[in-house]
Length: 530
Ligand code: PMP
Image 1 (spheres, rainbow, N blue to C red):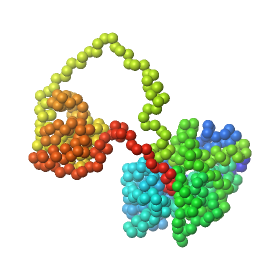
Image 2 (cartoon, rainbow, N blue to C red; image 1 turned 90 degrees about the vertical axis):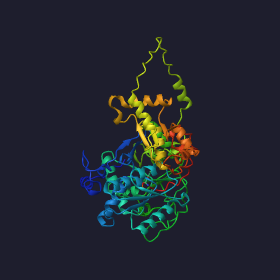
Image 3 (cartoon, helix red, strand yellow; image 1 turned 120 degrees about the vertical axis):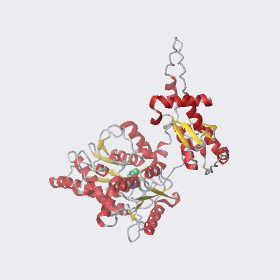
Image 4 (cartoon, protein in one colour; image 1 turned 120 degrees about the horizontal axis):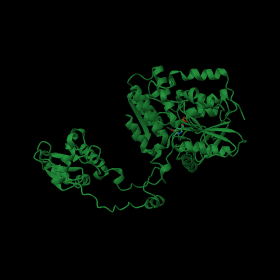
């Protein structure tokens, strides 16, 4: 067993590194979300590994946006601010498969930079949505152009518009932040028991480059183990990567193949990864199959309660292969770069059912039927409807100033379907939300609802009227938008309304009432780095 050569000076350096502006931690209260980056936990894996080793994982999902790339995002932006390459309010652009973009979106939101992310179309839709939710613009490139195509598009856009291009694959700030933070955190966490093997994959190679340098400097006995997709071993090959003078890859590596481990091994060897190899810092390579990556991700969830994406599963799979070959008592640490929530639409969740499984149906059926009450249910007394509510309903239905009116609830999903359709089609409408605070006093909302039900004979909401005529509920409104009836009624109004055409109006219904969608086709995506 090796012991970490962490000397006093090293620990001191660690402390001062923590108070540098790139990760300015403070205990307790944070000055902003950016101070919550880093200091991720290392946890023991108690069930998935063999008993003769001490197996640990470092959980980068504990970063604020759920991945290791939060570190790089902060580092790259702050390095560019310092060097003057990035000016206040300047747009930031990056080519990424997602996690870097999500980290950058957090940093740019906090610091006030507009952000454009260029991403291949085959990466999970959750990532696109997350990015847009965080205020970034997302530009998609064809899957067939792979990582090199995404990079080229980002580079061209940066040049054309004078935007700051992060260049995570070549940017030394990406590796340095890992040397100063991730690497030092590992040294601290293992200074008492020592670390024999550190296992990682690589995307940009930032984690590998920075942590390998920190470990080799302060704990030379720790072996650096690099995992690669079995079918796409590029760093573990004798074929060099062709590069442009600025270090960027000139073309795809001949050994690269599409693989399902998103965030790992792009179709070329990034400079940061190549530099670690050239410096002789890698002790072993461990290939991992895509199937193993997905299997171990799920095992980590079910047996350890650790929820991670395929690259975390792949790294632990590599650590397990290694564990079968190392001496008893060895300590192994595997990096787990992100959380599993980003992969709901990918093969990782392909076999996870949406509807009740047979076993679940059996459990459901085993519940005792509700006991039949012997006494007859008391008939609730009808509540009187006020004249004011009746005339409110009638005048709202026939209001010439608001010919399109919807009675509904503020937070009813079906009402939202109609709202979104009307908004997208440019149809001005009046919403009368009977559950809103406006109608709360003396149960005025309930009174209006009862008056509405009494008027139409329909006992559900929403109820939508056009020019005084009842169209129906959400399904009827969406259907009439689809078959042209709604447009006909709108143009027939005293003041005609010309609605825009909306694609697939039924698609506005809540997801759980729509027909199950076609099986996912995001298969064999090249997991180029994020
Ligand atoms: N896994 C995932 C899910 C990632 O997004 C990344 C980043 N590309 C990595 C692993 C690898 O990290 P790095 O870029 O530091 O090599």
